[in-house]
Image 1: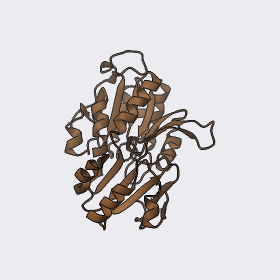
Image 2 (image 1 turned 45 degrees about the horizontal axis):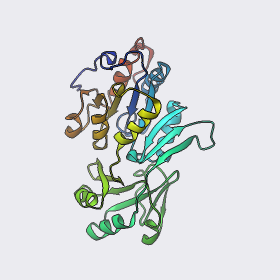
Image 3 (image 1 turned 180 degrees about the vertical axis):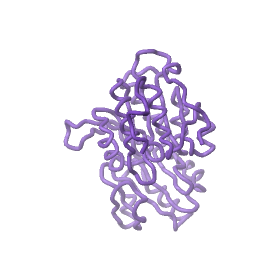
Image 4 (image 1 turned 120 degrees about the horizontal axis):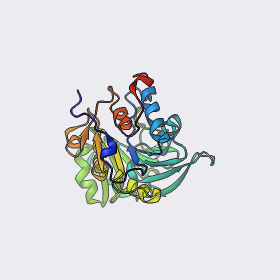
Length: 285
């Protein structure tokens, strides 16, 4: 059930006539558990782009997991934030990969892996390999990672710096304090999941970089998300919208609440900034 109706976004921005930066989370915001983009959502994203707004994906997914969504939404050329803020991409179909890595921040993995294996030896751990997938010391169940995985010896797990490490399993969130004590950012990304990135990074810090490069005024930013790793992003945005199914911690920092993923709540937000786009033009599912 929707807690708050989405207001007209034109009354919320400070600089009328200037394109907005619209930051959208992927999982739980644009796609549900079936990982498919509903046609109504695709149409709304396309309308926002056609109106001149900058639609920027901001996700905890790796590049490999983010790219299919960017392609399906056809937001090229454009910008995207991946790996919970560690990676900033310029989307460009003119290059073979389809993107250019503009920023990629890394950290030394060994202290973290040693901490995890000493404190919670049964915890699942995946170290991101930029543009490919993950290396692990034990195979994680299919569907948990947005990309392929390669099982290696423990010493190889920490052999190279990484942009992000994923911790999954019971007890993962209990390590947040200890991970932060190592000088790293630990962001809860689910009930039993933590993303570890270099110090001081988040979706918000990456989006601020994108905003500056696009030249969008600070007051012309919108963010929509549904999970713990969206908290800083919503605090950053001039207009912050939580999905209706979001946890209480995210609802507390949002200026608005829209419908759930089943109600296509993000569509209402996008339609509020694209006057003239009506519901009748789209199929709700």
